[in-house]
Length: 361
Image 1 (cartoon, rainbow, N blue to C red):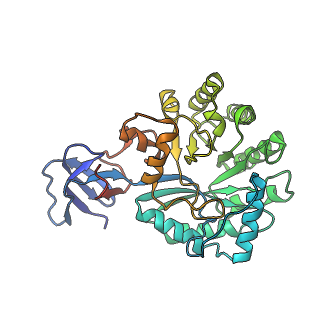
Image 2 (tube, one colour; image 1 turned 60 degrees about the horizontal axis):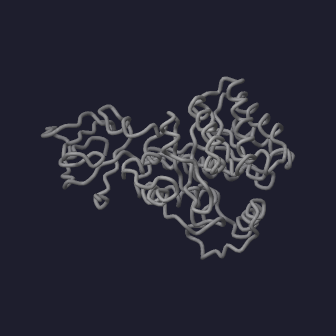
Image 3 (cartoon, rainbow, N blue to C red; image 1 turned 45 degrees about the vertical axis):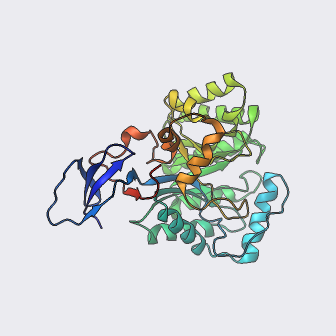
């Protein structure tokens, strides 16, 4: 339904008002709106919020629809990566069906934009990418899906992956991914040079997983910053997780925060309770950008999550935002580029409106 008049709703919990949508765009917001010939719904005083953003997930990894999986693998990142590759092969997971299941479930909770990473490696080639691309095609008009070509198994340590990333860009991936330049490949220069070269070749952005903690993570971030400055890629590079930015060394983390803000480099978090996470308040105070994501759910990495970004925002609160207002809590889930509430629910906004009738508290 592209034309709709919503009566008696409360945008972002404010005063009751009406909202008129024409051709899928917010045409007007105000009291006592009239629109003859357009379907009208009484919101009953419900809170209305924009469509939500899942800024970091892995649609290709989910086990939705499959029997319970017991996650009993080693503690290292590579243990989990190798285990996932084995389980996906043994279960014969369909590279399109699994992303569809997760994307549909997420959209039912009000998510209208998803940034999904798709594994690219020499074991499966571009199969995961092709599956997520088909999901994007079939759900066009329901949810917007950005796809990151993700070299989860590394680049220099896994010969042939750089060439596959290049092919992924030709095939239709929207961004180039990366992963722990020091911790995974033990060759930060080679890793970063490769992904920045591919991004430059195709005019694409970059989204780098950075699990590295403390000074190692800060070192990798400094190398990323150097390349962003040298190549003029401000606003085109994001860092996912950035656990090092949650370290207790205030001076180190403030320097990273300031550089992220200056270089317009958004930080995308998934709110894991087991790791230190970047401070939303400090990043926003510096003028930086911040997004949140589910990081996948019901997969070989963990059983938690259900596709609800509002629930994920609630779970993020104890991490580093005690005592903050309920609306500041949800800022990372709001429309990309997640600059905050001031950009939301304005006339002319083309983002779909999500009306959550039972989320009024």
